[in-house]
Image 1 (cartoon, rainbow over the protein chains, first blue to last red):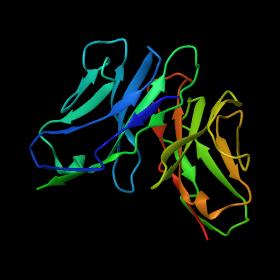
Image 2: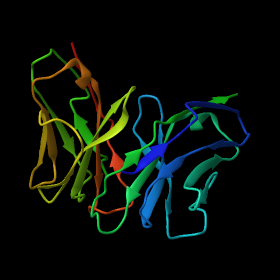
Image 3: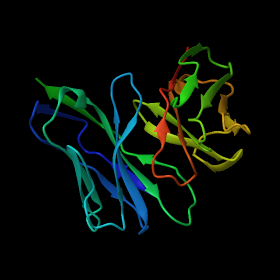
Image 4: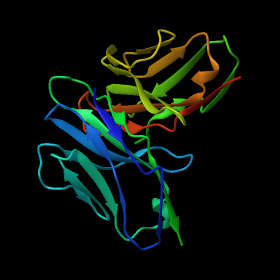
Length: 117
Length: 113
């Protein structure tokens, strides 16, 4: 069974600084997607960034980028120039691709990010 | 375009009762998934529906059930509520079953007393 692990329950960063959130996963599949979702307090979960496993190039979305290490099964999120609005719980998620024919997401336990002014 | 809506937003029930939660996906979306979020267990997959058919089910007891209607709206039902069912129930929709982006609703906060 696939699992996703986020080993950092809480992280903090100074405004305008850079922070990296860690995520590791376990799967025997070769085709899958990885995601980072952001859940602000009492607000809806939104997709931050996604990575297709078959792509070697790391995904980037403005201030957000990932470091995808397929062999190490590692998928970290880097937030540059942190802003107060980045404060939230961040979830790493895995989705199998291909024959499984499902959109089911497997989530990590989450990392709460605090941004200090 | 309206986002995913979930009703009710908050619900308080007592043990043994049953509850029905509703999810209206984004217009045009045909796939709906449900997740349970608790501090202890995190986010866990409940069900997935596409074209009124349950495509996948998580590891939850039979007290948890769901369905999807022809307009893609979905409901989930929990019978014989237990204290441990207290959670935030999230619904997510996507255009198709295997779309890369699922849009989440605000959730229904269920408290079981």
